[in-house]
Amino acid sequence: MEVQESSKGEQVGPANAAVKSSIPSPSTSLLELLKAGALLPSRNQSLFVAVFALAVAYTSLLQLVNDLAVQPHADKLLHDVMAFNNSGTGGRTARSPDEYAQLLQGLEKDAWDLARPGAAYLLLDATVGSAVWIVALLAAVATCSGSGGKTLSFGKATAAQLMGAALTVAFAYAVGIAYAAVLLAAAAALVPHILAAKGASLLLILGCLLLSALAFALLVYFTSLCVLGVVVAAAEPGRRGAGAVARAWRLLEGRKRRFLQVLAVFAALTTACSKAHALARKHTLSVPALELLWGFLHAVAVAVVKVFAVCTITVFYYQCKLPSEDELIRV
Image 1 (tube, rainbow, N blue to C red):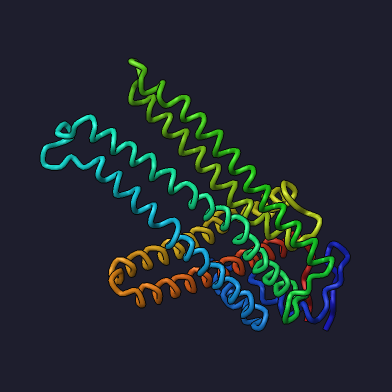
Image 2: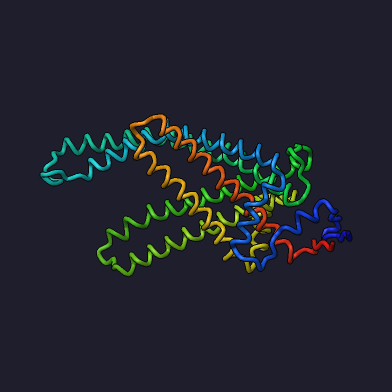
């Protein structure tokens, strides 16, 4: 077996050959890429069993928080909104001003009641959730690079990877929140004036809607870049934050369509899991045992999709590196 050096001067040993030779070439189809991501955990089963157990525990906790603290308030708020919009048999004008005032007060109270557990839910997902998926990412990177054992050893190298990924996630959240806040502030300031203007034409309104759609598309694209940027930060210690996102942007040159296809697949799978869970809950509300069973199965399904996504995106990252860096192995 002949070992070559990479462009960074690092030797690629025989242990890495079997793993890296399994990474599909950039010309492979989307199905081949998904297959490689699905098979990645089989190359380090003991490590991914622990990762999967952690993912199931987290998704179960998140769902429990949603079912006990968030969903009841959301259902109550939805009920109030429907009551406010429902004209009844007498129409909207049949309601007295006092009734509308009471409905508005109820809406405001329920909105605030939902805001607190909703914020806690989002904070849990942004902190604990990010930590869980970073651990899964470290396992995927270690398996793809051929440096992983049966457990993750948290030495200096792993600590650098963990810190880089965490800082990149924080950077993505900070920029995304700031961008969304600017968009909301601009919309709140401009939309009332546009709608109130006597000369506001349909073309002007459509133009504003088009600009809003473009701004939202840019936010989605930036989020997609950050997803790959977190993988870069985990795989290349020293790159973090904006540097990791910039590196991801360079790696995606000529491959943006394929990456968006990958993200679309997992977004569709996640949506399908949520729809199936909602449908199952609708038909098992009167049977608590079945509701708990469907909830657990939903948590398992979400964990499978998330780990599958992490593995596939990690394989995609290494696939992007193959043509740009001389990491070829001759056997």
